[in-house]
Image (cartoon, rainbow, N blue to C red; front, side, top):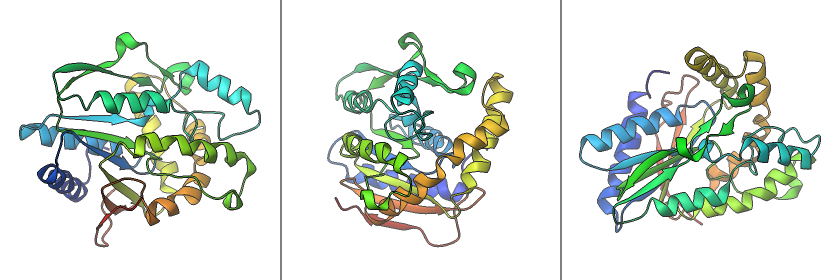
Length: 275
């Protein structure tokens, strides 16, 4: 994917700029939620570039960089043997939520400061991934005008245990409670809602091919397909709740995206969020 869909980018850019106009404080922290491979990071990078071109200081972050370390992930999997949802990174419970909360707070500094931002190497350990040493983390300088945080499960909240179609989802569902620490730090949310959630399988295979071509490391097509198919139950379980009520104190922009990651033809919806 060379760049985000032009109409999609224009809608989200207008949404973020409107937030800046009405902001009582800086930075404005905006979450970008959408399925894996939907182009969230590409969209965020394009937004940062456009905002900085008009004099705004902006930074893009991903919850992918907040995964547990490789050793921590192995320990989590060992503590829940046979639970395929916790065997690899990705599901609720496989992130360092406290680290993410501290990072979002640090980026709100109103004085000049340097904030070290974690970097996660998805190609490490044969595609299993690992957090890079702190010496390799990014340095972001404050103060900022906009912080954009993207993640496939941003805005997901726990559901009733009676809705769980697989008992192994119970742990991840319980761990979602802790992600409120991220949600309450967001001022607004962009929700990229896939018309066909199964498109994530094809998108992830394409992403891993691109990673292998660029770095020589990454999951094979078969491994990528096996990995991402584990997430299809998550979309069925938690996305309906996100559609109904996003857990942020601020506006929500919902945009339907088609199988080519473009803006679907139906009109976009922008509504205030309820908590």
